Length: 507
Image (cartoon, rainbow, N blue to C red; front, side):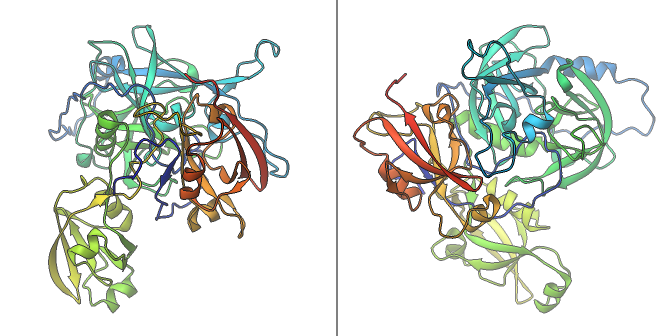
């Protein structure tokens, strides 16, 4: 569905429809579920990837050295240093300090010069990135550059170059940045679907700011999820991944990229032998969309699904509990138009066997909107094949772009993206019943809104003393204002607070 006003920067987004389980893990940073965002120049050259999808070489004999692979890989892995504002202390009544998992576990440190010289303190953090094209595109994690005012890339040859954020996708925790350089060394992308448990892998990154470091391990599992992101298909490894490795490379023994190191499961914040990487097949879909237009286009069917249990399989006359059960089909959606019904069990999508609902959501999301896909279902125990045409996720292309597009002089809160507050978000954020508003999904780094202290997860309940019922109301109240100084009442961490966003100084 195309937005009615594509030039808006305070933008209404469709509410998220599927929950994400909480985990007692030290993720590689605070992972948020929110829409993608593009920041910086929209003049992007096409992405030219090096892809090697040949099957991996698996030898039964042990190898005494991986030095040759390391020499091949390390020039393409960079250090990413960011500077961002220090978050203010928690609001009265929250009971928590103003820090998140990224600050606690991944080495952000305040810039502690003279307080008089630095009235607005900054914090610095370091992560990693992988060069994926000769002309400067670099793949990293969203949480590495989220909220960054400045991004600096340190190449393996010791050069330091400023980088621009091309696009971010918090739903997979991936981001693309770019440096102005040519002839850079790149890593070929492998087919991550061919990765098997037991394969030897190397993790390359910049842990603890020590400099480039390589660790060795094996693939411990594939298809992992439930780490708090909307779209997950992690490769699990016991190769040591530590603070600063975020955004670095997970490679096979042929020196091909199979994943982007993203998260760890730990009670201390350090390596405990359980690390997770976003596989390249998922990353490739995201980065191609981000480079093309700064945001990710995802397919949408319009169904509510659930995993099968042995009891459900028996009641639906199924021979085995394989596939996903359709619990609801929304009217007027691609699923309804294709003839999918409640009670259908999806066993195959676009030629791929469907195992569980997380995988099915990922398959649908990676489908190009508007393309036709064959879906096999079991209906009353009998096989049926249907053709569906997924649409784009409603509202997903309506995001904050921070300066790209037409004249926005008549609108305020530029660089802010909002969405409706659904039941899942209300429960996750602890918003009490009776409190309504528009949920901030993204705030453009460096914008007046960010300088005023707004951040994703804030709930806008009033704009210029007018109540905000939902995202549509918030968008309307930012159109053609009397001036460019906006008074907001926002709810965060159990309390309300007034915030003034001054956008009188443009540029």
